[in-house]
Image 1 (cartoon, helix red, strand yellow):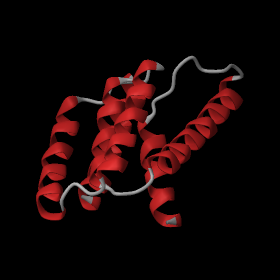
Image 2: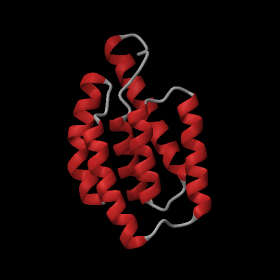
Image 3: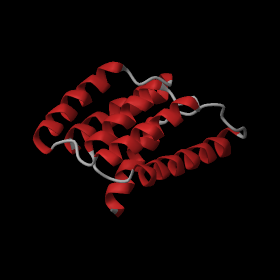
Image 4: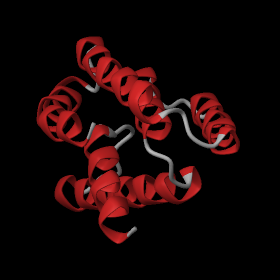
Length: 129
């Protein structure tokens, strides 16, 4: 699963940065790798899966894009780590992204592509874990 995420991170980030949309073809490819990973290693702790689902539903209510929700769901189901800690890293990197964009353009952006923050947050979380 790590290799699939590394290989698909760049095209997903480029697509999200250019059009603010993560194409479903990338999510479907990741879904295939996630199903293979789950068939080999199993689902993991159901409490963590339930907490991840609840957090994703809350993020959906706050207006997060559906492509970002799908990407986060695939990552949270595949890896068995704390969803709150990981989403904290993602939100921290999203805040850094907003600050950088505000510094460059001298205005606060109304929306940002979240895929770079998702992948950088994942790399940071896995490196510090």
